[in-house]
Image (cartoon, rainbow, N blue to C red; front, side, top):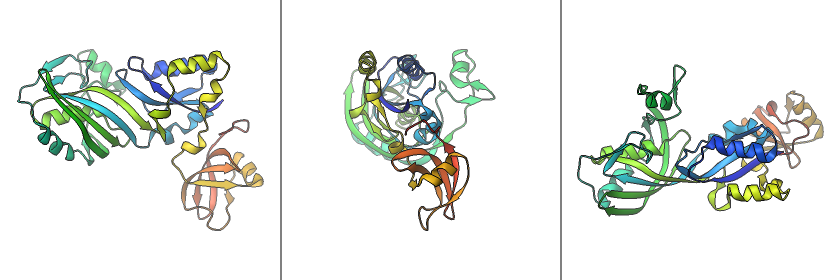
Length: 297
């Protein structure tokens, strides 16, 4: 098996739990995912099956889209609803103030990861250290938010819920966005709910649930849910003939026809079959990642 499953992860299980489920259903341990979702988050979790795990970096590194609900008027030690939660210390803003403040988060800026995150410093994982009562001093990292739109504002007795639709680059923490929005508005904030609606070229409207995968596996039709990885790679496409493909699979560089591809990395196909990723320099194709001959991408 080789490909990607567009899994709609429910709230509750970890991303690793979903990998374990796919290992059980497929009977192979070579399963990965492209972009972790926290247990309290749901939505698109691309599951990589078989040799598709070789393309984890390419599928993880693209933009992602989220539907998020931010609670203003309180703070959380974990920056999400897992808590513990403490009341904020300032008045709640109105919708206009929230809308104006959100504009300031669009672009590239340094973001401090949550104390309870998977970041590592000196071999120590931040969330493990925080749970042990010895939080790690994390450093801000550059992130990019491409778009950030306010789609809902509901003010209640326990705070204000701000619903946003955002598209962001890899490495962006929506929990940190919620925390920082609350700080800029001087009232506190945390991420109340999160649903990933797009990642790795996949969207939530075509995602399949764990229950559906279980049913497909029971019917011997699990392959129906496995998508070809070639169409999801965010790279230019280069198609080569049989002789060049043999050389590519053997790790040899080969010249391409004139102006076949611009310099840079490219997804390499023999006909309609993905055979790997290569680097093009002056119309010469050098293999970088090669799929095994029996794999079909």
